[in-house]
Image (cartoon, rainbow, N blue to C red; front, top):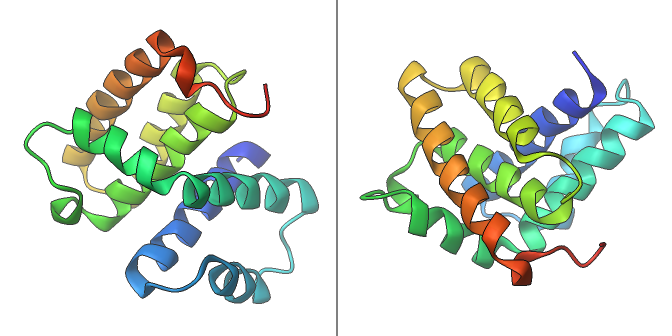
Length: 145
């Protein structure tokens, strides 16, 4: 597994802990990494950056997801799906140079590993729709560009 894929999975796990435990992001980061000394610095760095991007812009990200997940409220989505969508949309916003199809494909591979088979189509549809909107909205550009 590549460094980026591993980072995306770790970010998903941190977001899941944050979402389900209602903990402060710094507490999540501290407890999450405490038992993971084997993770190299590049993997850890990208995971932390994605997590922080998702946290910093979570209201905007959740709004985008809600607008594109027709007939689904955030609280009714499976927790894994909800947080995988958050991580992926955060990557859309924070890493504009990464092609959207790559981000979507990575999300689908992670969904196949951690979620249900039905979730793959749902996640694909939501991310494709969000990606198209962001591609047309120059105000959604990242601060890092």
